[in-house]
Image 1 (cartoon, rainbow, N blue to C red):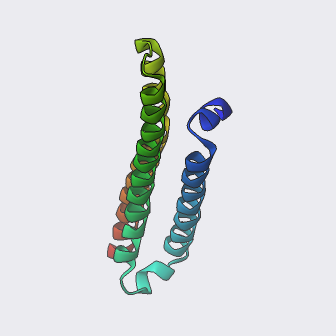
Image 2 (cartoon, rainbow, N blue to C red; image 1 turned 180 degrees about the horizontal axis):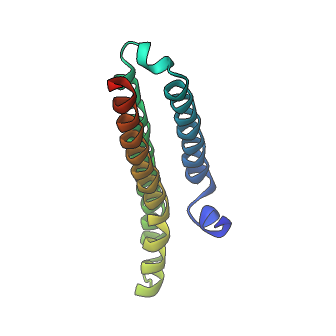
Length: 127
């Protein structure tokens, strides 16, 4: 796993990991709010739950940005080298996808967490 982290580029992979940790902290706060019953009395709690989806979307966009910056750098190197084998090109394209996949994984996780917390909140609110 650490190998993929460094292959994807420590800068963007680090940013994505920080965003993942923030997402998990916000999730714990929402879980504690629902479990303690404080969420039922809070105004706009369901709207606040959408912050999870928004943060996940921001993470996915950050992953795509990391890929595009990596591709620009790679294409600049290819332009200077002029002649490059297809295997090297395919390997570079594969590595550029790591940040995008990580960002999409975090986005899918945020959607799943949002969905489960929204169901739990609706169940708590109706009872």
